[in-house]
Image (cartoon, rainbow over all chains, first blue to last red; front, top):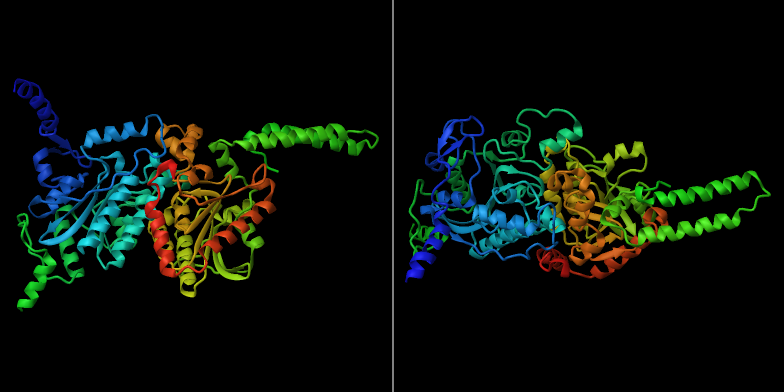
Length: 311
Length: 319
């Protein structure tokens, strides 16, 4: 008993409680400089309360805000081979992965979940920029494929939130091969007649933009998100001139016909549900916060059918 | 002949032999044949040594060699009745991408490829083989055409990558690449790709998401150029040798990884020293790969192409 309460329990507690106490209660908005209290910022989905600047949000936090009652089930992602090329730059790749896992508490840069949003069953895939810049390697590819397969199996739409610097160089050609691999996942959804909505968040660049992030049936971006293939610095070096204000930002892409909508994070949930329910020919959604679905509640399409039958 | 940096000792020997012969032409009574032949033999064995075991960075240099046969050379030599089809029906025709109808061994096909150009004027016209969105959209249109009329598609990949320009970005470069890759995965006709020089990142994938992928012995295929990788991961563009090593971008490593199906041998000293043999070898490889795919049903082609990519990378270097 002593050994357990004196040694094991504190050890376990220290493992789990570390993330409970934020080191810094205040965050400075990188855009307007306002100091934001962490709880207020979290309640506002990491959007600056003073200038509406959209800061990064982890997929886990996003999903908590998105799904009814904050409840979702993670979809298992098949583990790829670790470090397939035995890559080493200034650090070994496995060391970089371990450091990122420790810093984020996540396995890799993609989280896949199923659940209901406003009683609309969906599969959500969220990219985590905090994990090695959200970079696309085998795991990210596997996650998107797993998400698409799950969506096809459950006959649900898929929503993908992108955020990445591009391909994960440490996986070399295999990271590049995630472009066709994830495109196969998009094809699965397309052939099953399921909507695939992409929400592009800051930043979405490189091979990610040039594959699954640009192949949505509907393309939505968060305000001011950088969205491009070649980044502004590379272009400036090539053409040796200054780029116009707002170049490659969400609003610029909207103006150039590359997006359907630019939507504030606080309006995203309602908008996604509205679009999805129309695309899947379901009735209008119940608006507002909803508790988690009861375990026995039938999935929404069946509910809709039952409702239609009653009429 | 353009000599690469690592070929300098060879250039010296060949230069000496040439000098000697020039001298003899001026003095007919001088007998230099023995010395000249000795130098030739020395050059030959040095060339063999240099190319026996090229480092990844040297392979990059060979893959980019200006005297290598380019897309147009292959089309001229291996295809008949080549009829270029231009334009993306949206904005422009991209001269970095060649494409059209042609016959390969009398069989009508669609051929698409990046062309780098071979002198200053044509290089500028071809934008050094860097496609803009119009190039991918032209390719999409041609693949669609091939699909509708049941013609196999052959793509020749040779690009440093997509063009990092303002207009290219404004006109949706990323979307164009994504759609081209998607089209590759949709067409119900045999799709064969040969990487003849540089397979640069997304610009290459857009054409090389194929049933069969072959690579020339000294060509490269990579997610990023070694220089780009070095400047990001090593914070020093001069570390390109290390980056080239780490990226595993050679045909030999890519075959081990299961990304490439077949390697086409180059003559000693690289494709630039035996353009004809190289082109002929590529022709035989195309023929063999077409044969492997002949008679397959459209649905089966699409299904196995997708499965090929889904399975890719699961075995690492042991594939």
